[in-house]
Amino acid sequence: MKVFAENGYHRSQVSKIAKAAGVADGTIYLYFKRKEDILIRLFQEKLGELVGKFHESVDGIADPIEALRTVCHIHFTELESNPELAYVTQIELRQSDLELRKEIGSALKPYIELIENILKQGVEEKLFRSDLNIKLVRNLIFGSMDEAVTSWLISGQKYSLSGQVDDTLSFFLHGISSKE
Image (cartoon, rainbow, N blue to C red):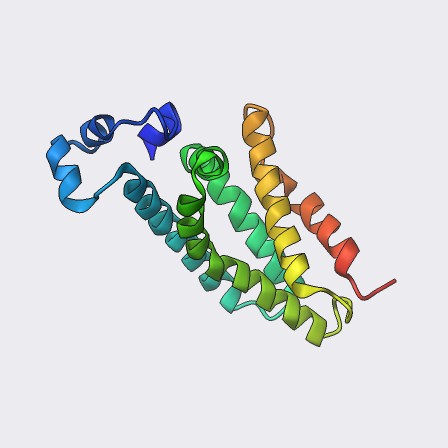
């Protein structure tokens, strides 16, 4: 993660990755065929951990609004506490080729589905609008949080990302609330 964050994906050589891992270059090739495979595995592992935190935290929450708050809070605090991960996920992955992004997109699917399920629950409980285009809104929610992290990185991390949770959630809820 550190090598990709410091050098960028394209300038990260396998030899630098091996050195940072404290292993010989050849050892890396015992586990990974290409540099892309390292990035994919890294992302799958880190995202898997994050999705696990989302599910664990949301499972005990009956209120869809509170569940969305929890998702947003975890999204922002986890990336704020790990700027290297934030940089790699927000900046480097967007510069990768389409096939690499597709591989990584499959790792994102459980997270997107979690947001979708929260929205469905909110519609069923009449907290969210009945005419909500759930698939579109789940993407807008994820995309908004994603862009907030990118903006935070580009700004040089000059403000608290986790401090943006309430305003972000307020924005979402204004658009999806069943209350007029």
